[in-house]
Amino acid sequence: MEWFTASEYWTGRLVFQRALAGLYLVAFLTAALQFRALIGERGMLPVPRFVERVPLRRSPSLFHWHYSDRFFAGCAWAGCAVSAALLAGLDSLLPLWGGMLLWLVPWALYLSVVNVGQTWYSFGWESLLLEVGFLAVFLGNDEVAPPVVVLFLLRWILFRVEFGAGLIKMRGDECWRKLTCLDHHHETQPMPGPLSWFFHRLPKPLHRVEVAANHVTQLVVPFLLFAPQPVASVAASLMIVTQLWLVLSGNFAWLNWITIVLALPAVAFPSDPPAVPGAPLWYVVVVLAVSALLLGLSYRPVRNMLSRRQVMNRSFDPLHLVNTYGAFGSVSRVRYEVVVEGTADEVPRKDAGWREYEFKGKPGDPRRWPRQFAPYHLRLDWLMWFAALSPAYAGPWFGALVERLLEGDRDTLRLLRRSPFPPDAPPRHIRARLFRYRYTTWRELRETGACWERTYVREFLPPTRLTGPAQRP
Image (cartoon, rainbow, N blue to C red; front, top):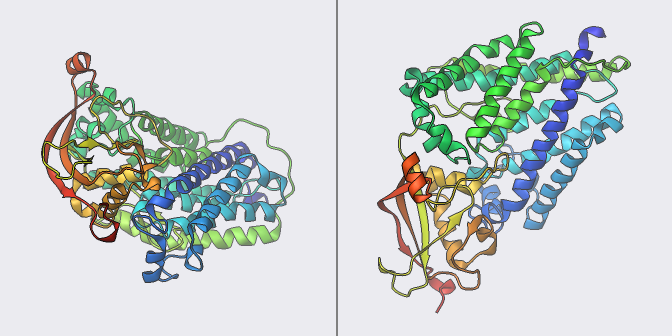
């Protein structure tokens, strides 16, 4: 069945599979190290409470049958182990059906995590990892050349990621049409990186070029993915270069990296593929059936892309098989940050000894330069950015965060860069204040060494303390 496979994409498949396994490893590591404070039994949004009110059919997950922190940790670390095995190429040493089952394991485990992760796992790249990971199950191993239809579906995902993002920009904030969004974006993005300050300070004409190039890459180039080679390879390469530019300019978890990974199978690497037997009939039937299912499910994301009321980052089925994507349909002009402080004083006066909690990724101390964390995902830091946009985003979890800080909860403190209070001597009161942040100028940077300048705006949360039995004497 020569029509079924494309041996010239052998190297592209290999690089894609190993890179995807690496992203799976990062995702499971993020879950293993952060879940107790976020969704654990004593987390801010506990899984047991979630599965009590949400049925299995709406959020398929292993944790509907059993949940304990130990069991979740076991699943997360098992996902790390399987991902590492895939990264090392274990699937290539197994028979075709064994390799497929091995790729199915991290998909099922991560689906179980995402479907109980609630707000902490509501990002588009969670669904994107699952959609791509499901297709990876059917991409084959060293016993068969890459199936043409699966390679096509991977390009179809990449097309929807890029073209959907381009459409949401053109339909959204007018600054995208005026080519001025990058006058603000590098300063107001959720989590700046170590080079974001310098990107923001680029000349404005260059920002216009950046936006225009983005429009070309997202609205024109995606169609070239379906052109003959070498045009498709050139199109994928342009997308990879664009994504690497975004990697340098900010921290977007694994969004940029998985987009790069998606582009790899579209590149025809110059190589001599090994001679392998034809694909077995059962494999052909399975791949064609799954492909037909996914193409049928694509109706809803296509309808969404064509709609004037296009939405971003939505799953249309509980298995996250086919989803819609997009980012930054609107761009903030001003950056706000919620600064959380505690005091050991009995009376929380304004002049009390308030000390600031430092987060790992989000801006805090104006003199602390942002660090690179992506593709690792700092979930609490990202949600704090949303909280600064509107207190409504923080409604379900911010009160629980404050309570854990007042208790000196060790799992919560591990999510922070530094706590001014040790776990055995937590503060008596916590407050939160809203500040406006802006990048300093070149002159201010030289004179003060600070990359940020911040101005107090208003109170976000008045001084709060524990009440009831948990209150300290």
